[in-house]
Length: 111
Image (cartoon, rainbow, N blue to C red; front, side, top):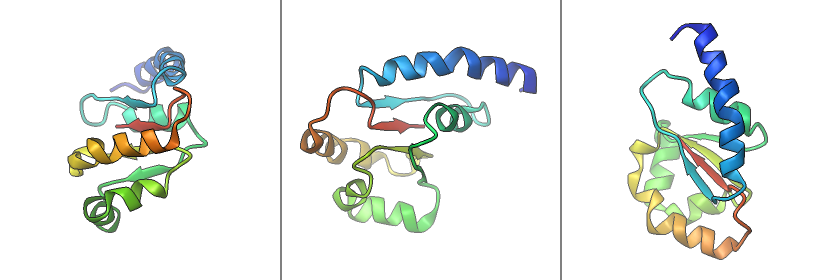
């Protein structure tokens, strides 16, 4: 993608992403490879840690102890390359959100 177009899309999508974060506890962003998804969510939410589930040790922890893994991110996180641990985003994440009982503001950004 041309750098000018990528920058323009980020400027257009960032306000929408931040708006959605006010209403939903989890936001999922999908799109083609190398299209700027990770950059967009990291730029929009620089205070959230970015957890790369492609890293073997991180992925193993998420797969073997999903509750313990999510307990490390009670203040929210950006989970990147989530297709590596699809089971994490079913019941374990729902349990975590119920336990936190926060207002709708986004706790997690999933890419």
